[in-house]
Image (cartoon, rainbow, N blue to C red):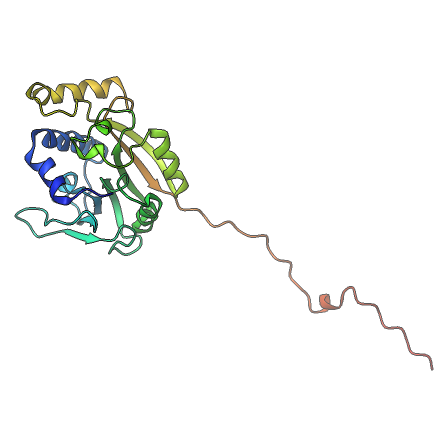
Length: 247
């Protein structure tokens, strides 16, 4: 079940914990993708806070928001690039997207495979996608005080297995949100310290969120066995030779 867009907006833009989560996730995303100059970048779910660094240099940025979640105008003070869509029918032509980011789009879907099929469709050959999901082993998936406490959390193995089944090749993975999911001042003040320490300690076990980079896998058509050239007289092979009629 998708969360309401107003609840997501309030968390990420109006709470200290949400702003800290936004900063931590965005820092990891930009470390993986420093820029996307001249490329088409799309986000699905509630990826708008993570897309902002690409507004300046990307050829085009699109924020896709599923109908059950609702849509908001974004970015503030600039021409709107957000659009509401169905889970498995996005208003994007096949193969048009170079980079794709999913945040609160996969784990809350009632049909994750259909979402992955649509991801595969809109990406161009060799296109890359970042899946940002709650970590099953982390604290954030166990608390309903944040959006990461809703939906289906994943382990790294579960997510990579599902991606491979749907035509993606996992390339890299990182974790983030090592600070506890609490609004207490001490943890908010020391959040960046916990993030730096957590990244040095582990790549996916302790973080509240997993980020997996995958590439669209296009199967090369296999060449069939060359057919034997048929001569005109081959069609008569196997037939009994006519015997001469008696005079």
